[in-house]
Length: 121
Image (cartoon, rainbow, N blue to C red; front, side, top):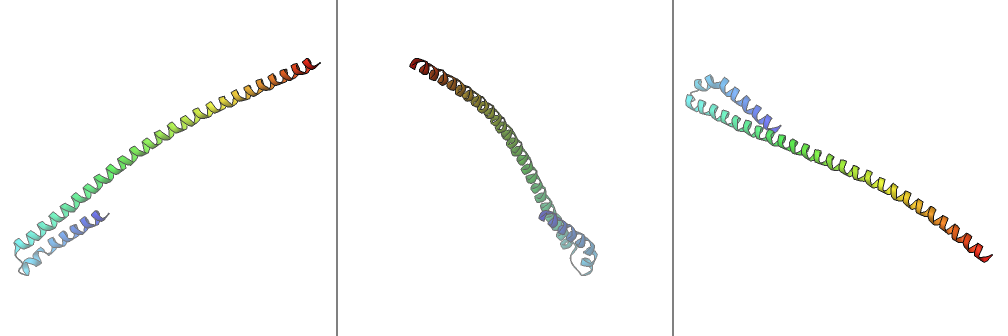
């Protein structure tokens, strides 16, 4: 934004300089000084335009980098989601195995209890 404002200001100064050229000559200002001043304004404007272009290129590169980082972050998030899903499946399988083991333990305890009672009789 600042580069744009500076370029516009230099354009306006150059336009005024060109409009004032006849009056500069009328006031006795050397034509070569007026020409030199216009060339300087053009050079200044060109430098500002180059700076603005460089800023735009830098901004474009920053956008590309940000998009790449976002893409990488999304990919990592998807990988994490996949790992979470796999972990949840493993946890469900472990819960089912634990429930089965508890059922087997309860059945074995019942059989042992029945055997102990039968032995006492």
